[in-house]
Length: 498
RNA sequence: GGCGCCGUAGCCAAGUGGUUAGGCAAAGGUUUGCAAAACCUUCAUACACCGGUUCGAAUCCGGUCGGCGCCUCCA
Image 1 (tube, rainbow, N blue to C red):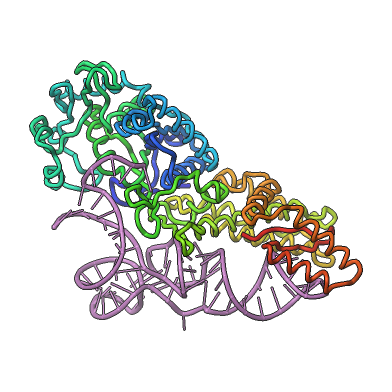
Image 2 (cartoon, chains in turn green, brown):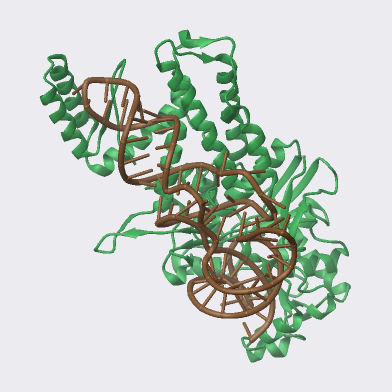
């Protein structure tokens, strides 16, 4: 097998080739913990979770490192607004971040380094850069000198001159005076003695934005990573600056592979607070199962923008999100299928028989799709084929004298295991998942189980008495309430369609 | 201004030189006391527009129009 991934540095798909075959060390830029994780974070970390799962499924011994940026100006500002210390605020949102990631079904990274836990490493890294002539101190600040690094701009594919042009208009006079070159960026920012910070050879201060990743990559993955990832918006300046710092400091390439995921957009506009089109993951979790969001993230290729529309009522209130509605529906179909598979009458199972294509080929299709630049939409297409085939199998056992071959059922079970392992989907208990979904929908419609069940009982009495007019009238009432009835051999069950 | 991405059937979305992607919605069918679910069929000889290369282009090249992103904090 060869896993091919698009590489930002070379701007083309490349075979993923770790330095040591069979082992990989990947570093993904984590969140700055000053607020709840938003849908963009959810997308990003679901994508890297699938990458991690797939690499492991392919037998790669993986070290997955994802940092937490817990030292940052935004944290300082937000903490001040809230009357908390920056440390408290960061700790709180780190906890919330973990909760959201687990809700999404993401496996924990192997190492989750924090900036606050790596101040000595950061200071040492900056000192090294100064010694090598790539950085200079000015009045308590330290800047990286961009012209001292020849390859600057190679990751984001832009010439230094263009950056100078773009940057010069924004710099304050003070900054211009301090910096030797307009593109130079801060490695260490001096602070007043009473401000949050740490002691350093240049005085009290805090690390600059990019240096923490360079220091933490070094410590946890060595000079050269196998893959570095993050959101598209990190290409410049964050990753470009990391490349400059790390490669200048280590005299070695920072990463063998660069991966960046596309944005989440709302109504075709990049999701951002300033546009007021901002959704946190957990506010959507009140409306949808977190796994529905996970599914939604897989419906689009990871490098493309993921747009979701918001439908509003006349008063401008949010009615729903078609993408998540549809994703939840597909997930419901997945769990219903699992439940049907589990409920096949054992007397209908025969020892011999063919395994239907959709089931037999699932593993290979899934693997091929993910090998090819993590093509998750194609993986979901394979899932659709699997679910259809399983339902067909179940359908067969419900016909007169219908049977299902044991090898096909075993293959289906194995396929679901693989689905869980590779995509992290379908891992919940099916009856519990479906029950939770139904509870959520009855609540949203303002009805109770008792409302439904009393009518079902009345309908049963009417049907037993062959009073089909009355029975149909009761069903019509339920339909008006949003309830669908399913008359089965063992009685009537009900659901609320999404 | 510099760099880059995208435009695929009613909607969402893969594919990217020759062979059914997939989903949602809609319609018909199998099944059912009637339904629902499930399954089957149809919508689908779709690829923004104009040129060019080629035996062959949605796919490669050039241009036009439209949408968007990065260049400043951002996943």
